[in-house]
Length: 190
Image (cartoon, one colour):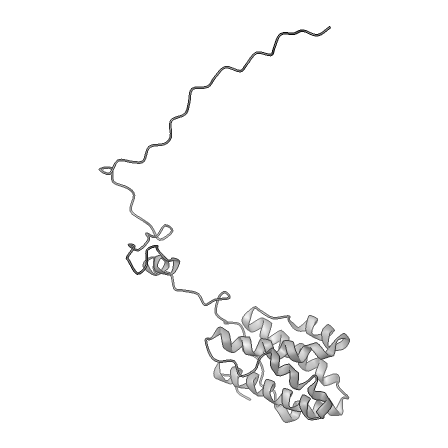
């Protein structure tokens, strides 16, 4: 049989008052480097910016995409020598080239596909590497705020440019020269 009495209601809790802000006459702790103050709002800039706060705290601004490139400098490869080696080795040197260049870019900038993945792509889906390599070389320039001499579109010289026979040579000359110029600008010799 059921009991028809309703369950007892829990006792009511007294309401919690909202926190009160500190009085204006109470001094607050001075800001530290971990807690920079926001610059005052102006009519042109009605809200504080992170860059302004970082500048006041003495923190140097970082370029978009992370820390600036500072890894090891890559090797300068002679364009004619690389083309000759690719012909003599029936394309095997091309695999080595993609591996080495991608590894150097990744080691230098911390970004890119790296050597092992570039080698796998070169062996199994070789037509994508010219697009990726040109894009990564162009990104090296863009991270320094310079105009990129090559981009992913430069890979179009390779494919479908291979149908005019000279297309891959044009792609390689443009991309390898841009990469060599980048390494030279950092002090590489060769």
